[in-house]
Length: 502
Image 1 (cartoon, rainbow, N blue to C red):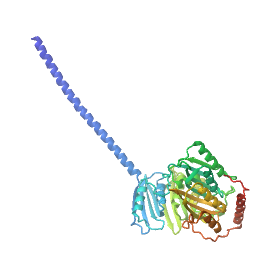
Image 2 (image 1 turned 90 degrees about the vertical axis):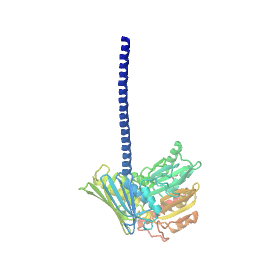
Image 3 (image 1 turned 135 degrees about the horizontal axis):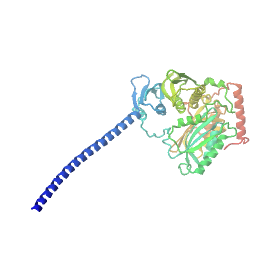
Image 4 (image 1 turned 135 degrees about the vertical axis):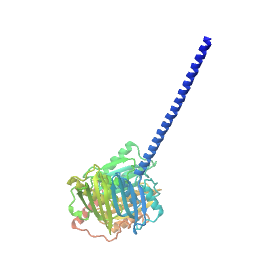
């Protein structure tokens, strides 16, 4: 009886214990459900927050582009709105410039973290943009899309130069220098695929992209790279280099080629007026320089840069590129063109947030902006203005550039600018040439080089610089004496009495 009672008591307690455990398990199960629901809610909130941040990031960093052909009767209006960040203005101008568009008018403004650019653009003929494909390309490129370069396009940003070796050269310019550089590259079995050459204030800057002549692959062997750098540096130094020449061999970067040339010239301090003998140039040559002034706007904390000069393609890019690479930020600006004169005004601050703080800094900005305009401009630079553009089109082969530039040199022509491109085994090159004194070349010399290279391969490009055969007389007796000295030196060089640096 007691045992049976005890069993019932134990069984009842066990059953009640089981009931309590079931209740606790049910509670634990419900709490698991609550915890799972909270965890899922937190995960959903985090995903939503991530999506929101992505959306804000895209909206903040992707420019909004609007193109309107109805606002202006003479130009297409392109509006760009985006978050204000360093270099955004330069990127927008670079896109329009690379498409060979002319900016006739523009407004630059910023408010807090946002900025808006408005450009009135035309094509090379001065007409509105009506091609739907071109309008779509502008909108997509300004909107941040990376478009593949079309066949024959100039890969300005380096994206089409994969598999090549980049060479950056700076030094003192002299007649025949480019011919010597290409001769060295030929001897070292380097095939030149792309190249750009600028000269300014007796300085030269060049970007040359090469590959191995036999394998077609980039040049990566350390000893060979060192040998190339050493030979090129020896050529660039010459006999009377005021400042040491610099050569760099590396892989191509994504920096825009024209911007890189500006940077090389700026680092070489070409804005300092140095003559071919190493002395400061006289101020009498400043009459043809672009007008640049800098004043401080104290009440708003800006420095105001005003530019007036002859209008030309890529002018805005050159000015904005120079200002940006000097570590200044453009907050506001206006652009305009009246006949053949360009007027630009920029409100700038240094990247540290302050305006120009000293007279030396103000003068340096003026010099650098003037140099940035003069480096490229065939219409502005006193030397390049007298140049003749020659276009070369023929099958590429080993030593072609060395041979062509040697013919230029032997006929008393000096290369002031060069744009070299190779596509599908065809060389498409352009050279701006003058005589050794920077004056218009003699018509006999031009006809001689055309005859030697071949009329079917070398032609005059009068679209860039119209040229007549009648040579203008020297402006002063000193110029004639300078040309005579160069003529004597050139003849001694050809006779082997002056040592070549190559």
